[in-house]
Length: 207
Ligand SMILES: [Fe+2]
Image (cartoon, rainbow, N blue to C red; front, side):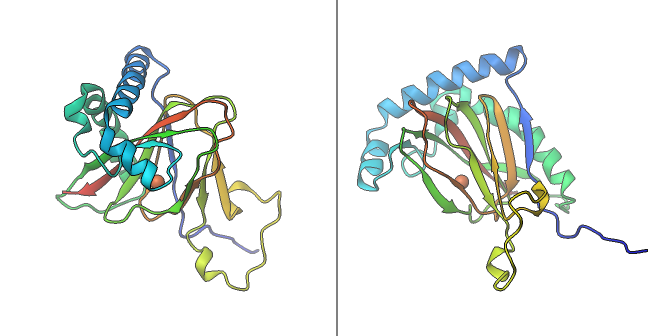
């Protein structure tokens, strides 16, 4: 009798952080903090304009969000145990080291905005916490990391099981936390919502 194993698994971690009291409060605080930083950060606005980023990101302009608003410091405290759990679930051998937040930034994606496929270099775990996800807002789409090696491989059936698909879309809602290993390529297709989609992304590195 044949035996089929599943090898080289790619894990995606999802948790809903805003379903209970403190999480809901944090979500409200983050919403206000994101809007306030986005309207104050002139350097960030200029960068988005110069780089044709439809919306706002603090990625290129601010490295002190937790200092600007306690909501971001609280968010990293809330995320830390999830990152540790994710690392455990992937059997990462960290030795005496641990994963610490390296950078955290805001993304405000306007209707019609998108974010092309990319990875997060120099990091171990990356992820996004979703603050505002209006109806019709973009999902996030992950790409099979083996894709560059699949030169002559036939495409998968349209109805292939989720773990056999080459591209997998995940639709978040407000309060969703997603974590993945930083080498996993992902993109945000065009935002077809009528209002902005707001999220906070971050990288964790080994310390
Ligand atoms: Fe990303």
